[in-house]
Length: 258
Image (cartoon, rainbow, N blue to C red; front, side):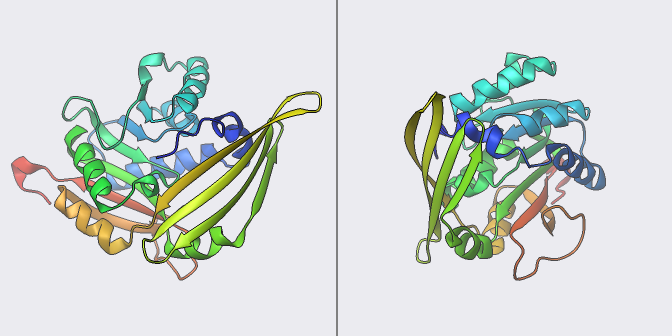
C-alpha cells in the first residue's frame, strides 16, 4: 500500500472538483435505504478526511483510519475545525483493525480503497477485520474500480493534473495476467519563486471481480445486499461502468441471519 507522502501535499487541490457533500449524501441515502443498527461509522482509508468530516456533519459518529501519517495529519487539522478531535483519526491498517468487537454500526471504504489490497488474501483479511468491529446487522459499504476502468480508462494516459500547490503527472499500466494496475506518478511541489521540488510515487491497485468479492463477503460472514453503478441507488452496471458500489450486511450470528 502506498505512503501518499508527497501526494498528500497536493491531494485536496487535485480533488477540488469532487463534490464530497453529494458523496456524503449518497452514502447517507444508502445507509438509510438498507438500514443500520446505529450511527457509529468507521471510514477505512479516510485520506485527508473530507468525506469523514461531511458524514460527521450529517450526524454520524465518525472515526477515520489511514496508513498515511501525512494524509492523517491533514485530516486531523481539518477535523479540529469541524469538532472532530484527534481521537477520531487513527493510523491503522484495514487488515488489522484494533478496535473492540462491535464498535461500529457502519464501515465505509470509499474512493476505491479496497483496490489497494494486494489480492484475495488481503481482501479476506480486511473483510474478517471489518466483520469483527461491526455490530450484528451492521452495514459495510465500499466501491471498487471495474476492469473496464482499470484496463482501458486509466491506461489511456499519461494524465496531467494541476493545482495551486503543484502538478502531478501520472500514467498507468494494467497487467492482464496478475490483474494489477500500476500508477507511476511524478509530482512537482512548488516551494518558492521559481523553485520546485520533484517526487516520484508508485501506487499499485488490484482488480477484484464481482465473483471474487461475493465469495469473500460470504466467507467472512456478510450477506451481499446490492451491487450498484456508483452514484446510483438502483440499476445494473453496463460495459462502460467505471465504479461499482457494494452494500453488504454483517450476519447476526445469534439469529443465523445471513
